[in-house]
Amino acid sequence: MFEQNAFGSVWFLSNFPDWLVFLDIVFLSTGMVLLLRWWWEDKIYDKARSSTPGDLFLAGYCANMAAYLQIVGLPKTSCFTGPAWHWTVLVGMITIAISLHVGAIARGGAERRWTMLPAQWYHNLVVVPLLAYLIVSTLPILWYGDSAQLWTGAVICFGTWTGLVVWDIKHDNMVQVK
Image (cartoon, rainbow, N blue to C red; front, side):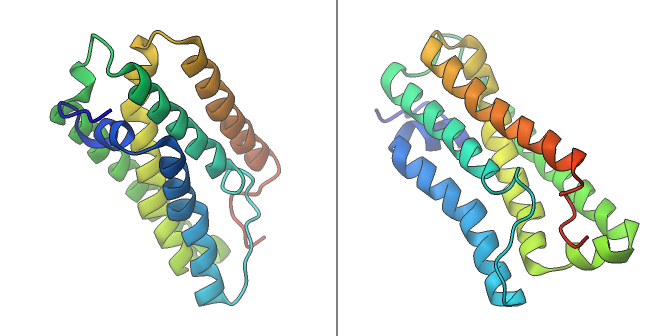
């Protein structure tokens, strides 16, 4: 279903098949990070579970949202599909990502050296704001949407990713140089 009134993430999710949304996000997140590590560091690794396989669950959330939007369409309350909402969320997510990246560099030591690698720059300044934007900007659709399947898929995907983040923090996996 081609959604002409949608903007930003809602336009993207409404106009591309769910399987393509999933593959695009996997390639742009996990795929590119591993490719950059292989190219620049001559090795492929990912200690953080919230990254791999975590990004697969975030891609699943977005694919689930795409399927919902294409079948059901926008909810009746669609004030969250316009430019003002999407620009606000996008700028907010980019600001948070830059702050976290600069903070990691400022801490110095091994974390700074690791953060300066090209794969980390890409992850922190492209993947994090992109995925955060896709998810945060669609949360109102999840809230106003009228589908148990949408809720179930979102809770499973986002809940699993959140659990993986907690696991990584508990096991000190966020900085992969230790």
